[in-house]
Image 1 (cartoon, rainbow, N blue to C red):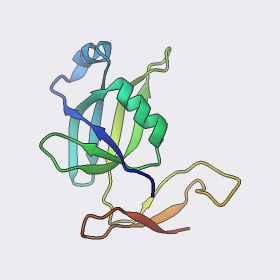
Image 2 (image 1 turned 180 degrees about the vertical axis):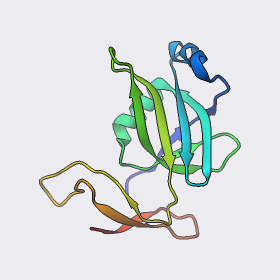
Image 3 (image 1 turned 30 degrees about the horizontal axis):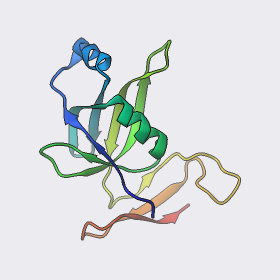
Image 4 (image 1 turned 90 degrees about the vertical axis):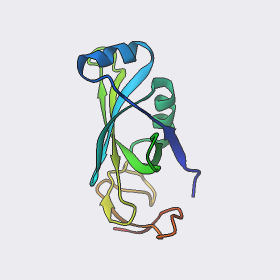
Amino acid sequence: MADKISLALENRTLIGKKVNRLRHEGILPATVYGKGVGPFAVQVNARVFSDTLRHAGRTTLVELQIPGQKPQSAFIHALQRHPVTRAIIHADFRVVDLRTEITVAGQKTDRNGIKTGMTCSVDAPSSGAEAKAIACN
């Protein structure tokens, strides 16, 4: 399996319209949520996030490092873009439980790759080892 993609996040104290100050400093506001998790207001360096998005896409698990919490696996769930410049102005991370079945929207391929709407059963050992997709329909 490929190397784990990790992203270091910081807790965010500025909320509302004040986040424009962060964007001018090159910091991207984000939210982390999921079943039994958060929501947490966080921030990340915009350039680091762009590199992570380019490498991971929206269908690869990213390990989030949030200060004061254990590392959590999440998908980049939603992006908000500026209407004119198309720059990313906010990101949402959806934390997933690695022991339950999920549906991931993938890109259509000509080969035996992931198809849109494909359901994969994900199994993670209780020892904390790396999760593997064991069955896809």
